[in-house]
Length: 349
Picture 1 (cartoon, rainbow, N blue to C red):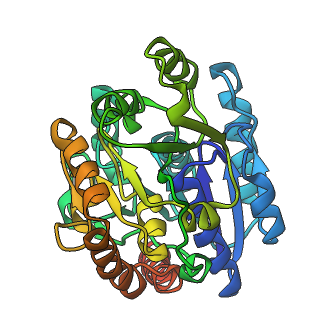
Picture 2: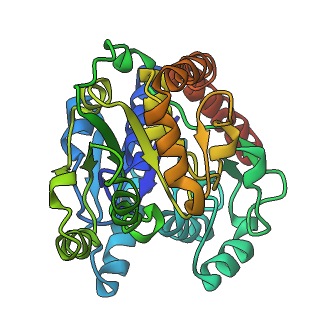
């Protein structure tokens, strides 16, 4: 079987890194694997290449290029036998659905990766295209939505646990780590509010890993409040395990989410986690293994971690054991491959 992982671009987000891990595991199990990026975004393309994964861009960066990109995808499908498409996120699903209309024998699996679709027309489109998708994967039971297939299969995200076993050795200055795109979903402007609420009482630094369209606005807002000394902008980084080992906690004040890979990575690294209860986060985090708080009380959770760090580390140890037991990429990939085989047999026979 040939597995085509189709996604909008090879950015630096958790979804793209998960596809990298899944594609690599699928390849190791003997499948022929393509990772096809609709756009030319290629921040982590080299990681796929280094793992021997065939990676192709359709070159669709504006609407006028959609037809040419679709023809390129169709040619790849036609050049291979026993093809299954796994579309990740909305735009990839649309390309997959067009292939399905032309080639009904090609199975189509879809993972939304987010538990919330902001634009109403996208929700309607996803609902109307349900018959074209052979299987929808959701990240947790509480993430079922009306615009997904009623028999959606729950398969959580997974990570390579072995990469996050370094000793936890944070510096003397309390160090908060943020990992994620600087986009509305991640609520980056809240970092300014957090500093303003805590700076009179605590000394700390926030290391921000990631890129995104809101970075310039965030930097401007930080400068306006004269709190530049509280931030390090690290950009895209390849050394997340090392950064986690050198951090006191990871925070994620998101407005909506899927199942963030960064939370699983922090859990595997034994780093205390503070997050909002959105998306599939409540399926991972609870008051026994982390700190869960909405935006209005988020700063109080951060204060609790700083004031009683020994308790935070105990909670982190609980989360570490849960992540190691339930979210390793090998077991995750086996569940995906079982679904691929099931869907393929159902479509072909």
